[in-house]
Image (cartoon, rainbow, N blue to C red; front, side, top):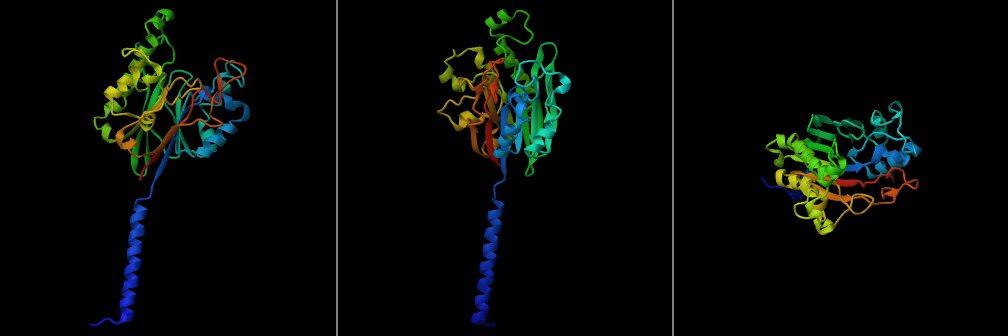
Amino acid sequence: MAIDMNSRSLIWRVAAVLAAALILCSCSKEKTVPLRLLYWNIQNGMWDGQNDNYDRFVNWVKAQDPDICVWCEAQSIWLTDSDQAMPKEDRYLVENWGELAARYGHKYWGIGGHRDNYPQVITSKYPIEYVSKIVGEEPDLVVSHGAGWATVEVNGKKVNIVTLHTWPQAYAYRAEDREASKAEQGGDKYRAMEMKYICEHTIGTVPEAKDQLWMMMGDFNSRSRVDNDKYGYADDDPKLLVHDYIRANTPYIDVIKEKYPGEFKPSTGSKTSRIDFVYCTKPLYDRITYADIIWDDYTTPIRDPQNLSNFWRPSDHLPIIIDFDMK
């Protein structure tokens, strides 16, 4: 049957519309699904925010629009503008993290394992499920500030989140003779024990973890060998043990160093150390579109003018922001 010119023109127009629809459909399948992580040690439960009802803190977090936040030192401890202990019944955090997180758009929150005043809290736009809350084992394997292993599901993909904060002192936890412990670098060796314990009880329990989406972050209170051109420690210095263990025994990648291999990016107000890290397994690392330690008008640490117990405003640490494409 012959097809007249009008019919043929109509067929071509229909074909063009269908082709355009197919192209649009194909493009929509490639649409990005952004996920923004914000990690920050906020020093003593964002002590600096107590004097303005956390308004500056909330406004800054809202401006970053994170999907998941991990906060180290997430408990109120001290009275406002003071180094005097706050009565436990007056502490706003940790119990009210749900209320605070809602102010910057996060519906969900959870707290990891902890023994003291320095827990880690996760807040999220996605439901959070804890796999384990880690405090270690008495008497010799205590994880001083605790750790946690949680999961969230983003675009049908499970993301494992490990949070931690290792022992901060130069002497070992519960050392009877602190000076002797300092002399033998007991603090560094203790942190290495904590790190081994945390890894063995999180990513180390999953043989296929290297092919999964894992992140681990926190205040490690330790230096990495990859920054040793800045520090100049001896090859066998115990200060390097924590990150040597991670690099030798886990599939984790140090995000900031990998993204900025020729730079030293400090994470504390002194500008002399990088002790805050975010690690990812390669399948998650390959999804990163942006990562940096954030120095801006709000986050840049300023020593408290009263010189209170080494307090800084807003914190003595800097936040880390990482963007992932979860399509």
